[in-house]
Amino acid sequence: MKRLNEAFMKKYPNITIDRVSQSFDDLQTTLRLALSGDDAPDVVEANNARSMMGQFVSAGQIIPLDPWADAYKWRDRYSDSILSYSSYSADATKFGEGSLYGLPQVGEVVGVFYAPSRLEEVGLQVPKTWDEFSDQLKTIKDAGKTPLMLGNVDKWPAFHLFGAVQAAHVPADQVRPLGFGNAGATWKSDENVAAAKQLQDWATSGYFNEGFNGVDYDSVWQSFAKGDGIYLIAGSWLAPDLMEAMGDDVAFMAPPMVGDKSATTGGTGLPFAITSSAKDPNVAAAYIDFITSDEAMQVLADTGNVPVNDAAKYAGGTKGVVADVLNVFTTVSKDGEILPYLDYATPTFDQTLGDALQQLMAGSMTPEAFLDALEADYSGFAK
Image 1 (cartoon, rainbow, N blue to C red):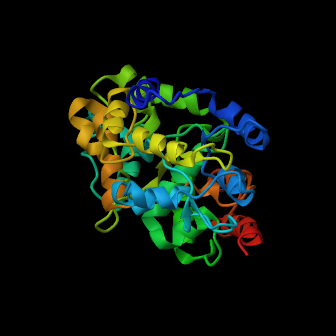
Image 2 (image 1 turned 120 degrees about the vertical axis):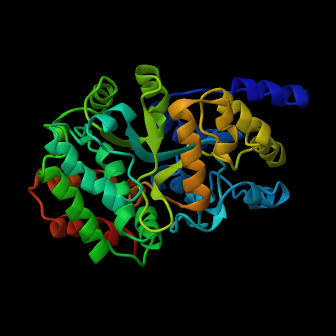
Image 3 (image 1 turned 60 degrees about the horizontal axis):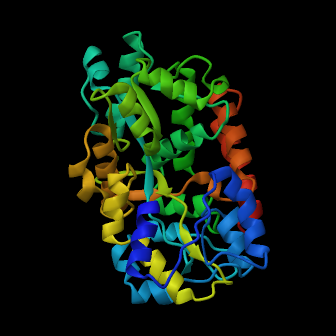
């Protein structure tokens, strides 16, 4: 951001950017206060979720970007699936559709990390279909190796795992309203039962590392980096750390396809929004356009980020697993299906889903009871 801000001020010397940088956790707290104060910023990064951006939309604290989306042709530059993550109805009751309230710079996607040498050790090749991937887990287990690594004491890592499994069983047009918390869908479908059953079967068959519900996320991916396990289903943000630890012996792929399209959980970094207190919204919009331009995407790629637009175009300047991530994100976001993080659905869904997934994978909750718990939270909110 420093490079981009300096370039913007050089191009427009009459404008000064006073940037306040905060950690993700601090931003969650201070942004609410900043937007309700007398000296609110002109441009902010706001979490897409209903509990943040949704509340700012309903309170009128950020404004629709539609006029500038048309003027700057943002809808031509961005895929519809990416823009949906920053779209709300005016009253914020509908998420994923309506007016555009933010524009992101970077993308992220849940996929499968693996070490090619470890696959070779157990006599396997990279799977091309979901069934082939699932069948490999038994082969790996029988060879005395751990098929899947998971650290789920904080509960959210299983969200990403289940999202990948769900995408293999449930059509995208059924997942989206569930993930965005919009009315008209249901968790109690045969497809969701199949997804929940497969995840539970993997767990009860011993395909995960021992005690996965009681170990933390960081220690498990670090164990994977040191040689434990064959596959790690996780977010693309781990790529730089894994590459540093594993060198060329780590790769990243989208969850193997069902049919002719890749589908998986993913999304964007925090999108940039214009506050209702902005002194000159046109200047604010020009700034957002500048920091999301093609030139900005190159700067982002050069600094180790995943550009949200045409990421594969910048893969030539990278190598290894980082290049894999850029290619996978482009393929899924442009030609496949990027699906929302399931905890977006309701203000309490992160707790509901986290608790239920731990019980499902421990074998103490049936797939049907698991879906009943999710349905109760979702249907109580999406009316």
